[in-house]
Amino acid sequence: MAVAVAFGHSAAFSKALLFLHRNGGRSFTAFSAPYSTSATVASSSSAFSSADKVRRQKWRVPVASVLERGGVKIARDDVVRDEPTNNIPDTIFTKLGQQLHRRSQHPIGILKNAIHNYFDSNYENKFDKFDDLCPIVTVKQNFDDVLVPADHVSRSYNDTYYIDPQTVLRCHTSAHQAELLSKGYTQFLVTGDVYRRDSIDSTHYPVFHQMEGVRVFSPNDWESSGQDGTAYAAEDLKKCLEGLARHLFGAVEMRWIDTYFPFTDPSFELEIYFQEKWLEVLGCGVTEQEILKRSGNSNNVAWAFGLGLERLAMVLFDIPDIRLFWTTDERFTSQFSEGQLGIKFKPFSKFPPCYKDMSFWINESFTENNLCEVIRGIAGDLVEEVCLIDNFTNKKGMTSHCYRVAYRSMERSLTDEEINELQWKVREQVESKLNVVLR
Image (cartoon, rainbow, N blue to C red; front, side):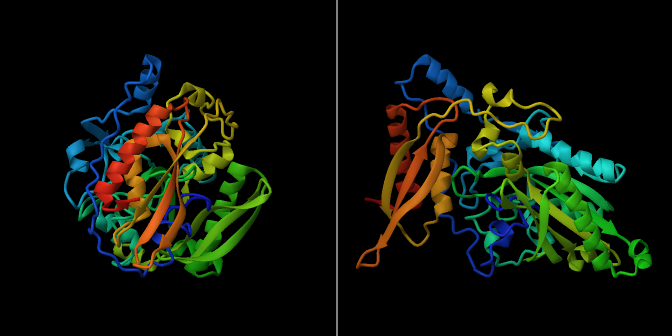
């Protein structure tokens, strides 16, 4: 399972995203791809000074030809292909080898290690830990093994990065749950980078990090308690996660919210009262018996939880923009130290944004996620937000959308020439790849 805080990417458990889209019954055509996304990053403007060029080169991550993840060598051509069933751009491939969660002085790695320390201290190192599993998984692992319906919207080309019709970049760490259960693991934590096509703003990014926890119980564990297995697991789950919340946030007020998830029953969300507001921390529940049955655990019960590391780290470290996690600027990276949870980020600069509007007539296949992919493919992390500011339908039934694109660097001021160049390329690519008519 995989969940995050309510205001951003939730993982598998959170209400807003991926598998918990409440309109899950909506049908779709998985590969009605409106464009091929082997995007190229815009070249540097000749107007830049040499210093600006150096800073731009530092921001641009080179596209490596081969990466290695979890002992598996991954070639670019294995992931990015110019064919209609592939929607992965180079900007996503470059993230595959970065593994922020394995950097002990990075906020994501610091938070991961703090959670590991909690489980080591309270469960005598009984939880096995996995943080280098390959993010390339099958559709079966990503969807079928966690009981996602065949017609669920989360399987769509619009939401998920497909390498081919049977292979994806994992949307959540739950993609490894069935395999680990089948191999006999009964207590484990899985942390990893996950990938999801999404909107653009300060709390959304197409790559983020999740942690999943699973604990399995046998009849010997609960029979002497006077409870059935489900009640026993639910009680143990809540006790575990309340302790984790105190470990991360201190003595905070908490509440449990009953909810629905397709892979747990009963299902819960844990909220804490933090900084004068209720904050959703994670989702969890007692694992559906069908998942256990398929993995050879028919007589057992289990609980599972999931959380999004970026969402918690943004709160704990006061980090205002999710793009900062990916910067190599020493003014950011030097502020954090191994084992120091909750050091408050000190903004090193606030460069002004530049806004550009773009209007066009949409077609039936248009989606905002596709628009954001095109813009990210050109502007990378220079794009801060894409927001729909106006839409209308004329008497002929044609619908127009107007989007405002905010460009802002986390490290330097952007020049007018640079932004104009980017915006023209965005307009050209939006028109050609999305088959819209610019106004």
